[in-house]
Length: 334
Image (cartoon, rainbow, N blue to C red):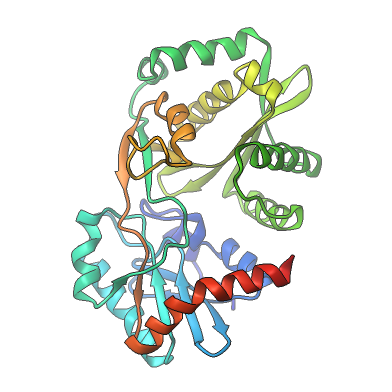
């Protein structure tokens, strides 16, 4: 299914937009077996890209990743969008339609409850983030960094780290190699090169993602990919080698991403996932949080994924069985 005219202007480039609601993301997921549906609730907003997949025994599941997209502060629009998606679940006799808008509990909890949604298992790992206000000059942004982070940013430059935006195939592969090595070191799950190549290539070609690599004597030692989501630049992927850590490459790289977002006219820079409770040192994201918080920003927590499920009985059975089903699919895939 092709996206309607003007879809990305509303779903991605509007202030509350997100790349996961884009026509490019729909193409990516279609190649991976999902059926995209572009739901226009209003004109130009709200909208929701719903991805459909049929599960054996349980039936169809719909998922609106980081959707629905509504105009900031439009509670009536949000309520209308949630009612529309819940009605879609009933009409399709679907097991559920899952939504997970990047809205706070204060913004979305009441409309979700009123529309009959229940808190469901999360798909997106990010439930909290740090957001930097870019409405300052560069000196003001630099002054907003913690002292040690400001020193580390300057050390990267002094040690000859060069940061370049790149989009060629060799650079994508170099970033993947660094990212995979980082995953092995930090013990987080990485997917295959074929998966990341499809995602990164598609989004870069659509103008929705930017890859930057940090070089030490022409060796790629760190990388970062950001996404253009409405008025935000969002830090989505980051990685560094042992050599990159020694020369503070990730600090110089992150600072360059922030500067570039400011130059592009973004209003905010989103540092990506942090622990919901930043004081929890046992959280696997605590280490990345310590790095990110040095760049400043305000904590923002999201309401999380919620499900519209027409049949409570089918839904309870699915939630109980889904972890086993997922593990079976992973075993088959391996």
